[in-house]
Each structure stands twice: as C-alpha cells, then as structure tokens.
Picture 1 (tube, rainbow, N blue to C red):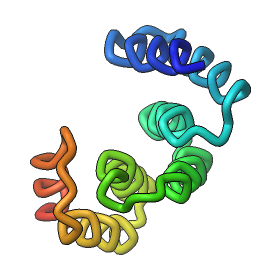
Picture 2 (cartoon, rainbow, N blue to C red; picture 1 turned 120 degrees about the horizontal axis):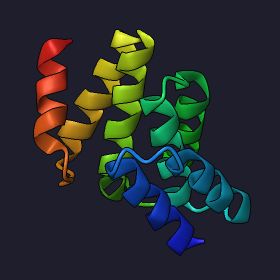
Picture 3 (cartoon, helix red, strand yellow; picture 1 turned 90 degrees about the vertical axis):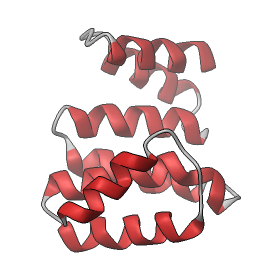
Length: 117
C-alpha cells in the first residue's frame, strides 16, 4: 500500500497520467492511512476535482493525531479550498497552519498563498 502511494506520488511529480489510478488503488487498500488519503486528495485537487479532493483531505487531517504533523496536509487543504473558490476557508486554514509553527516543505508557498487572499 505504501509502495503504491509512493508510486502515485512519483507519477504525479513526473506528470504521468497513471498517478490517479495508482493513488485510487492505494486508497482501496488503506483508506484510513492519512498519507494515502492525502495523496489521493491532492491528486484530485490538482486535476480539478476539488469537491472529492477537499473531502479526502479533511479526512486525512482528522486521521493525524498531532496537529503539527499535519502541516503539509493542511496546506493541501487550503490550496484546494482556494482552487474551489472558498477564499475565506483557505485563509482560515492557512492562518491556523502558520500559527501552529508546523514545518513542512511548502511553508513558503503557504505564506505566499495567504498574502494573495
């Protein structure tokens, strides 16, 4: 399951169209693992399916016991909310995320997105 999840992520980075189907396979095997749910949610957001993507990202965040460990997931959710047109929701998520002090790879992107809102 983790191998499929990682493969989906690599495919996504390579812009390979197989990314979504592999992420769906990983999700079918482990629909409660936050990383797997996040990967599928993020891929859906990037492909324009914000409704399902946001739903999955909220599920992923709920599955992470430590708020500071959910930084990247929260960023994905905020980005999805922004992409769906929910700027107020995106701002709320970003403010909460940045106030938490969480460290994650897209920290600068999160700050930049908040400035745009």
